[in-house]
Image 1 (cartoon, rainbow, N blue to C red):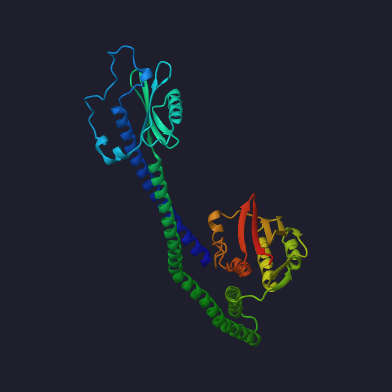
Image 2 (cartoon, rainbow, N blue to C red; image 1 turned 90 degrees about the vertical axis):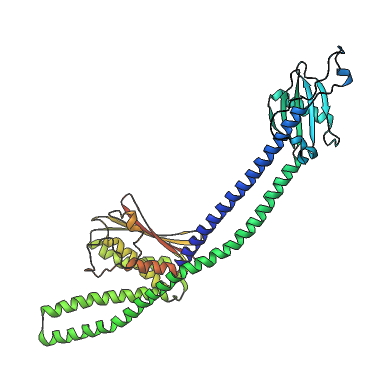
Length: 419
């Protein structure tokens, strides 16, 4: 139980830390990428504004009075990227494409010539055909600007930005992962510190129940013996009958308390046992009780299903589940006992037809002293310890037990590893 709680605490802490880390990483990466991308795009647009077409000799106009376009004398307001080191160190390419026949008027391949003229011309024609004004092509960001008689496709090498962003992401991920691993051990430490007081209190509670049961066992036995002696001397007496009745109830409670304490605190002696034989052997004595109460019994038990377990405790488990099914069945209802094997687990199911148990009560059925019917106060020697003992037995066998209600059927399922 406490191991499960520790796992939940560690899972909650780590989930919060991982989400925080991923959120921080996303914010840092996206904000950095957007800022750098925005700066690069602004520089590229500025480059396109400053561009002046230099025609090739074969493309010079026949009219000698026609002049090449020049850089506009009035520069728009805004940051002067052309004066910054980033602008001057950046690599720009440009291709001027005629609007009339899609011919290439000019290609500026910079001095580094990382891309050939043919590659730049191909990219430019594809961009013009697509009618996109900006975007990314391979490792180049581009803008397409209408220059009147021609379309200018300006490129800027984006390799440095992409490599920088990749490096930032990689190192952030590496150091963040290391930090999460370290925090995982911190979370385990914190979970142990959080659960330790609860675990200690629970152990003291179990020890108290065990000690109280042992202390009460002797006076109960003495009272029982004395009332029998008095009854022999004075005969039938109403007050003695009341003492005997209440003493018997106290004795039943003490017995169940000791049984629960022994099941929870003492590791049972395990051996190879035939669970199918145990289930059939425990079901047989209940057939008479089931018949007398007007109920029906149906069993489907897999034979020779051997597991490693304690025969006495497993017999008690079957007895508790059958007794619970009989007491909560509707008149004329069917009780079904099934034992089957699924892969490496033995699955014992005991179901009965009865009033469905609300989901809120199902959560507490295996708690000590819990009774779904609060009006009943132990007059039938039932104190809400049976299912708690059943859970302790299943836990001692490294299994789990659960309840489900569907279509008027109340079903208890115990899953126990075969080995």
